[in-house]
Length: 256
Image (tube, rainbow, N blue to C red; front, side, top):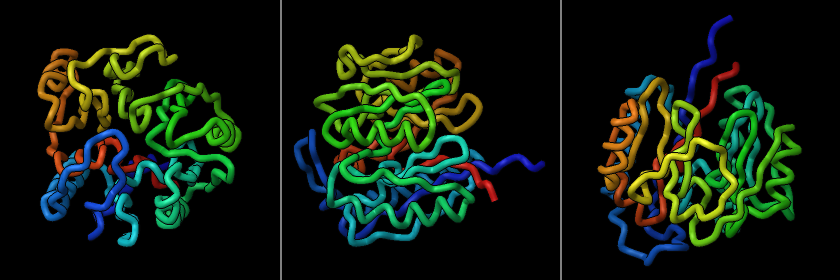
């Protein structure tokens, strides 16, 4: 049997990107043209890492649509279409649902009154950590556990947009985390503190490669010292809208 192809679902920034939501940062002007150039470079890194890049249909009426991670959770052979905590983002999910079906996934959905953002879902070893706070509620976490048949550990968060703002998984199964943002969060042993907030949000690209934002050079040095291969990408315009390297893609498998 052929090995499944690793796919990166992405969605290009739309013309209303600069209107995107800002929750924990002071709003700053966004250069949309530069943001698109940075997004293109980000996608080129994914393709260069051997991922099959699949474009989700545009959602130009939705300013935050480029942050595609929040609309879909993939685990095993199932994909769960989320119900974002920000009502203005719920129209984004139709395109990602269609993309997941095209890849061969059985699609489930989070239903009202549950809310769930994919950025709050951190995959662990046979379980999921789900940040519960401003965008994801306990009912959304409960429904995710039910839809996927997997153990979910709720992680209360405050003062950050998503759980993965503060912690992500490294290729060796440990976690990168910015400890001042995590407080007493119940994460697994193996949490590695990073020196810069954005260094907590990294994307494993396969092997030892690790995608890292350009504004955390000390974190990139730390990862290199640990034996990882950091690949640095500038997403500074997108970061003005609280983006991280994980939120611009959904990694999945082509099942059909």
